[in-house]
Image 1 (tube, rainbow, N blue to C red):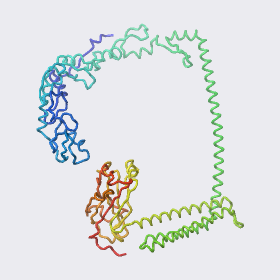
Image 2: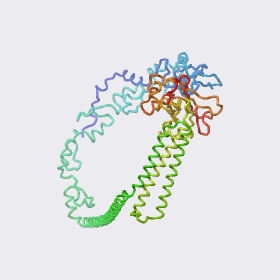
Image 3: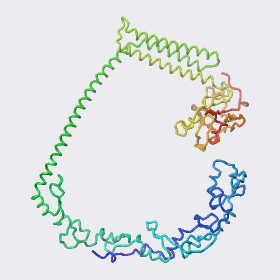
Length: 581
């Protein structure tokens, strides 16, 4: 093979930096800012003045800001110092002065004072004895004779750190990451792996046959072509597929195959035995699969028969339920009439009448259920052609219809409750129980918001409700409770003035002292869609995304027995007379 050292060309054009340029490029990576802003690096101070420490992080002041009490903090310590509070007491050295985040200002005088503190050179351990102002340190480092510099190719992987007198020689001759050109193939590679390139990769290097066939040396790029025809290329025994591991030149393989018949027969016998076992296992598995298939076919035929019987039973039951349908229809008509009466509810007497009708429906349903139970116990009646299956189907259908009536009655009960709790003087008192659980559901994304029951400004006035996000919404998400007012579509909107202009107060009730209710009042914006006549069930909510912070809300003042009370007051003093029905 050719001499590796004679095949290297250091790439000139890619390294056309003067010595001073290269030093400057690396020293700039170590330089520090000398403006009024604090330098990035933290040197060793000779003796740092106590007034140059941050009262929050207890480190040297960086980009100093002055508080109203005269103490100083770093720029990055402002937010951690105040947190979510706008006002707090300074606790440094028992100061006790009330400080405000709005009164903080940058202190350029303190910044200059900090930048003039005396520091040691960062290369002091290498012999530099310079002591100078912190602001002058960057310029000193660029000229310090004791400086050590990383290689210019550090980003490419070179980890060398060099003194000034070693730097030039390293980056031009010794660096393993120095680009070089192979004179044989003209490929560009790195100096550190050039020898590997010559010994194992270069296609233009002369090599000998790896099988020692005696052929004259040839180029590495011709190796594949030579291997195909090499007389000493290793070959495999023809019995390799059954486990023979012998390989060698073709002549040796042929001799092996002739003289090693006994071992080949033994391998063949083992191979045959293994194949017979595998065949037996496959046969057994196929037999099991066939049995499983027959079993499922029988099951499918059974299901098909049952399905056919059910179809016949269903067809027969349709002919014997006319009477039950008429009875259910009668109940449905009575419920519909009752529903309409509920919608026109105007007085307590009407509500009492409706309650009596609902109770009558319940008694009728119970009587029907008792009748069907008696029929089921008595069995078929003489003269009727219903079989047991048909009667059971009939009973199931009736039970289903009765269940539907129960659901409808439950809905009517709910509407009664809403009507009984509805407020008609523009005031909503909203009690939210299980606050902790409901807040956690909001955090988990299960129930983001809650709606209150509707309330009204009068019997024929605006219809409204409240909406609350316990984990916050918009700007208050995850930090505050968000409280909103919502206009709903009402029965008398056509007779009311629009847009809605009444002043609205959102209130969180104080449960401890009754004196610290939290209140936020706003007057509707006439141009907002939130206060125009609703075209859907409800308008877009309007209110306060950052109504109260969680850390303030979750105190005994506002949360007791895991319950909070929210209140909405709508000013009805200047409201026009409501329309008469």
